[in-house]
Image 1 (cartoon, rainbow, N blue to C red):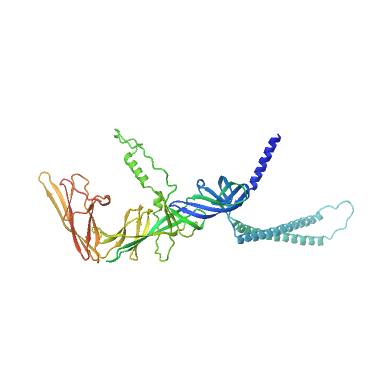
Image 2: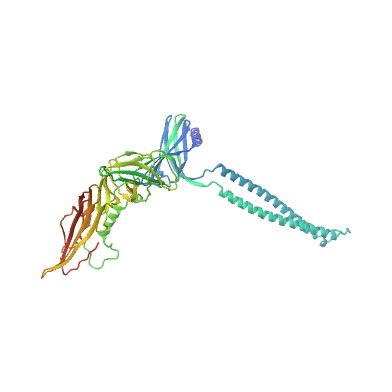
Length: 560
């Protein structure tokens, strides 16, 4: 029995000690790594601890912190052991300024004064009511029989009635006046109570973190808390500045990479170190599973109402939807305005890892939780582009300038809008797709007025041949005229097309003096390209055409 009592006493003492060792601490946001969707936040908190067991409470984490992502680390001047880590959501009062606190005190004092005044008026009203009751009783005296048989002196009733009437009127007036004053005081008290309610500290939802630690001795500790939030993102956008060069100077292209950061995490990131990562946490961890696709004959009779129509086609459509359903890429398609930058800007440092790139933004950055974009510079690359022209004279008799670039080794280019400048002049906006290091891409920089393009139909011929089995034919010939007005030679590609047969009986034959350099460009059937080099002031003619033959009994339909 004595042993049991001792154990209970020890447990009670331990519980009391644990309760006394609970310490409230604060932290601040020190570093943020932003992903294309989401962010990881690092908070730091400094605390002094005595030897023994402690429960350190941090109540300043945002409500939107993902509980399963919380990680805690510590550095201390002595031996410190971290036990369990508990988290919960709770409502805490918002911190008020001293001005707001003094205003609430003033309102509370005013309400208390009015309530005291109202209590005094209620006392006055009750006294007047009692006086009125007494006067009413006095007015009943003439109607009452005299007490006993002794003769009493007759009172002066006229004087008594005058006094009763006077006092009754005064009491009634006092009651009426106090009721009016009480009603006015009630209005004032209600108004002040409304102002006091609006001045009361509001409640905000936060995440509370309770960290159980054991210290061997008194020490100083720095607690690092890391967690992820979902309501944050960064979007890349670019500036491509092309200097076309001269007859003696080679063209140059400067590609500036920027980022637009925004967040609604419920906490402000003030003067923090920001890094941008190309990783996508939470975007899926495993490849999709495929189910078998079967093909069989349709059963005889009517199709059951519940039978799926086009099962194979619908499965293929679902497969395509899964392949193309990248929500993060959609978020990266947000349009961001790009502005020319004249001042020197801080550049980021790049850490390239096996499966991601991390850009550490130079300096400290403040990003409020208002979802307003914060624009920062990442890096700038100087490239040696290959210039070329491309024209589609069938649609537009203009030649457009393109710069072919090779993405530098190291980090990929995420999809984003690119602002295009040619010789210092803004010519429009384009888009960069997802580009891997070493991959080639062409950027368009608008029409080139120093190259003249003409397109004409030379002739159209329709004929019919054969006696028993007749065929019809349709032949068309075109001419494209190109002239280079530059002082240097240029590479140009002429893009055109011929019809594509959808039936074995329909034959399409390409005619002309010059065969195309490439066919079925970018897997587009019937699209052709003639690539050539034009010297300064050179004019070139390009004649080509096609002939279509088909059975005379059939009618052709040209479609897109």
